[in-house]
Length: 350
Image (cartoon, rainbow, N blue to C red):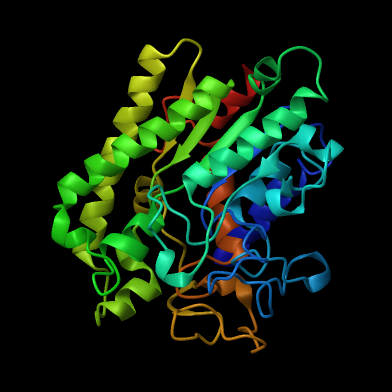
């Protein structure tokens, strides 16, 4: 069954590769789910520019993506008709003409809060990503006709942020005091307040079509289960994630109600995972690579032989096939409980 599903996903996905982009540009903010190499030159453990990462990427190149092949935002790029993924910020040159297509600012271990992920080393948290974005806008102003904010009005934005505020902050008490300072309810409200300011900054810059991802079931990923000496999903962490998702969904609704022209939408990853579990045959209780102590792949070790039956590449990150399935579901669904209040097709068409 899983082989049939995987085949259908690939066929659907490939039909978009040679089309024209449905939006002129595409900006990506986020963490390791979306990072395509921005961390490669940073002093951090949170980088993956070594094998076995990238084993299924074109040319078998370990680009710095935290998976065996393409990330979920890579798949979105191709579904939207982009010939290639947009460049990472770290690879942008002075007045690089490619920035008119957009830029990927995402950084592994980054969070909404600046301290999240700091135990792993340097990372480009959300405020720093926004500072980099402002620099790109200054360059874009020299390349487009009229005010740059009118150009980016037409662009597409995706944000995958918040996981590290939990798994590399709140639920890592040996490294961070956060859980002793805030209840889970207070922490979710704290994140909402900080995230609100950050999303408002994007809106003020001209961003209008903004997709904000909720968090998946972080209590069910291999690293979380191992850290908690558990044998199954950690309910406490999944409940905390639900509080965050509720706050972010209400924030999206608030923006749409009160900001002229705003077309923000929320992707409820937990709802999608619950309603659409991976089909029988997928291995979810072990990883596709040998793990280091920090649950990333041990460098230069062989990956599993069949990456199409493993849900997780390492202790945190999905394999390419899961990214393809998730991206295709999100891109095509009209279920407002999964993606709402606007579907991808509505955001891309209007």
